[in-house]
Image 1 (cartoon, rainbow, N blue to C red):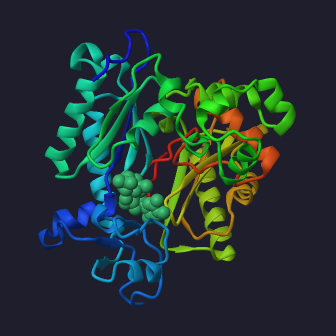
Image 2 (image 1 turned 180 degrees about the vertical axis):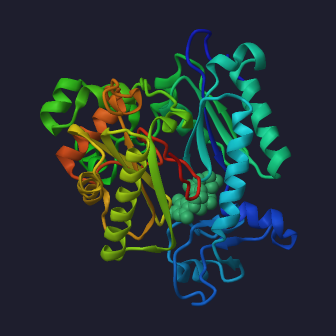
Length: 404
Ligand code: TTP
Ligand code: MG
């Protein structure tokens, strides 16, 4: 393989488990190995209802994909094994995977139930070149879980994420420093973080098809013509992405509470009542520690396991449940697009008198700025989901967790 990441540059790994739910089922039920397996069926409702959470690679050959209605999957692949989602089990395996990753560095940022970023820049002296670390990590995951993962290695999150997806399953792709732009150039613009369906359409209409086309654009002209934040978008297309890997430990600097619904729900009354409860709980916890907070963060995970966090800072410190609820509700209204909700969480930080905590007050990264600007211009949904853009905070894979 090509030369490893240059000394001095960051070494970022993106790890993504292969056909995660289906692979867990095939591991636990040997009779399913080598067979098309579709996870997402609701056994109470037969094949007619529900959507595909994931399909084994054998089932993908029939054209079955995530988010497809089960009825359609069944037409494409009638001989497949259709299984219900066993979230408890997958969450347990997810925790095990994340634990394994933490043996390689403290800087592990889980992004969804089956993927995480690692910054191994400082592990290099002890563990070797990033590619060596990536191989060891893949072996460790197989050793611990008997499951395979695909890994991308690069100097940035953006490129590592795209790389991990290039040779699935069981893939390993290293993008050496300095070759990012060439690596990205032939890919369609939609693969770039920040380019959702609407922006993709706009770019295609302007004759910009590949990331390479975009990288070659004059950012000022792009900005004038499309109104997007041309400079940052072009930088991303050239592979320049300075977002740091944020470790979970950051959350310890906040007081928070989460709730995972027994069954995903879109009932506004239930959602509102839950946020009220959470806000009260957080306020109580602040008061019991003699703290006030400046920033409220909402964590929102939908039925597809997409996780977003949004934060807002008060004018003045508070430890009042009502004030925390008001902000959380506003943030909720900004992210909730009507899907069923799996988890809600509220965190309070920036504690009374002390300087603001870095977790929520760092200037937004280039990627975050692009997202904001694109959303302003094209509306919500213009930008791809949290899976490509971990937000500040910890969009992790854990189940309900209480702290404070
Ligand atoms: P992914 O990593 O997107 O998919 P995957 O692991 O099944 O397959 P791949 O090899 O392409 O990575 O998602 C991880 C898990 O999240 C997946 O196994 C099931 C769940 N999921 C859903 O429930 N709904 C969805 O729409 C998607 C995309 C995933
Ligand atoms: Mg996966």
